Image (tube, rainbow, N blue to C red; front, top):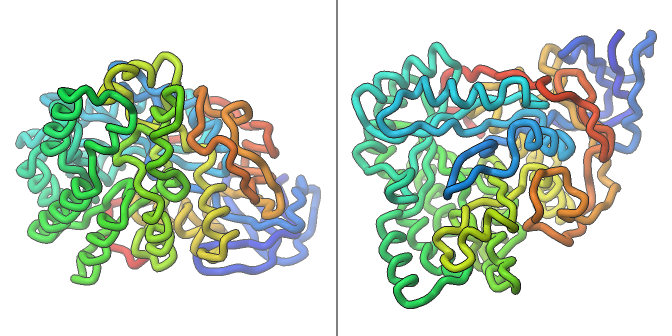
Amino acid sequence: MGTLIRGGTVVTATDTYPADVLVEGETVSMLGQKLAEAGHDVVDAAGAYVFPGGIDPHTHLDMPFGGTVTADDFETGTRAAALGGTTTIIDFALHTKGDSLHNALKTWHAKAADKACIDYAFHLTIADGRDETMAEIPKIIDEQGVNSFKVFMAYKHILQVDDETIFKTLQTCAVAGGLVQVHAENGDVIEVTTKQALAAGHTEPKWHALTRPVECEGEATHRAIRLAEIAGAPLYVVHVSSAMAADAISDGRKRGLSIYGETCPQYLVCDSSDYDRPDFKGAMYVLSPPIRDKWNQAVLLRKLKNMELHSFGSDHCSFNLCGQKELGKDNFSKIPNGAPTIEDRLAILYDVGVNQGVLGLNQFVALGSTNAAKLFGLFPRKGTIAVGSDADIVVWDPAKERTISAKTHHMNVDNNVFEGMKIKGRPRYVFSRGLKVADGDTFTGRKGYGKFQRSAKFFPVQL
């Protein structure tokens, strides 16, 4: 028998209507009002919204960085994601200069296999512009089911690539059906400002932000868009933190370019004053691009409302304050960059977006799930509630309140950048391919249940 989700209001990116949802096996088999129970397990969705499972397009699990490894692996990270209403993640497989893309992907498959509690897909980073690397891209898309490739304009001597590599990647993906993602900050300038700050004796966490001014993000975003324009390629700008970068994306779209933008929860509720927190707690906010001045938050929300920014990723990259962030106790440039955000991503978007009257329910679903499914080749299998789609479903209680805290979250980390934030709205139940993986605060899924999801070729979509 199946599972009957009864009495809720189904919300997709386009529609809102009262309906029961029947799940049989791993997919949705029927939608309608007053469906017969017929021996099915009945789930009470009265007073709740029934959303498609969240898709987080930007995570970093079990990732080496800054002399350490992220605190969450594919088991702990996906468990926390499920409890927050996310049923699919797209993680970044890191390519190493001189190695093959296939080897990078193989490494990340090994990290996820038998650990992931929910479904997952992959992006691939590009570490060099060798002919061999470019020749692999079409094969990765066609044979391995990965359609997106990320280039870094920052982290000089570590991840940063030059404009030649970026341009060649754009050209290759434009032909092969891939989507290029870009971390847009001017790494060369940041290299200079960081050395100058340290030489002057500035070591505190706030100097992470002061050495990565907003102009570094704005310039790099503009440059990446112009390179994509020359190459005739689509472009996806990750973790947009500022009005300046968001405006560059809007300008590109006004010229008819296929430019897409993503922002993250930390940029909507945290601000530059957080770097001044005492007892080295400002290190919790060391992530890149850095947290900006508070006025940027309203601009980013407006861009989401107007669909000038198109998706909402967590950029989950968790490091413990004790023992990991402390690596930069005497040198801000050695603080591992990142924050734990995978569990609270959807709740924060709902609270500051829907509860504040900025976003409608359909926009919330589009930003938290559907748009990512369309951009990364998973729709309509993922990202919607429809007959035949995977039964990735969140029964969302809009009245339930909670206070975010590291003491109660489920991420494997000792800090939370949203500590003390009171929010309204959270999952009552979460289903991943028909399996109940969350019942309130209780994880009911199982390690290794998640499956790799192949992405179809990218094609420009109207969002």
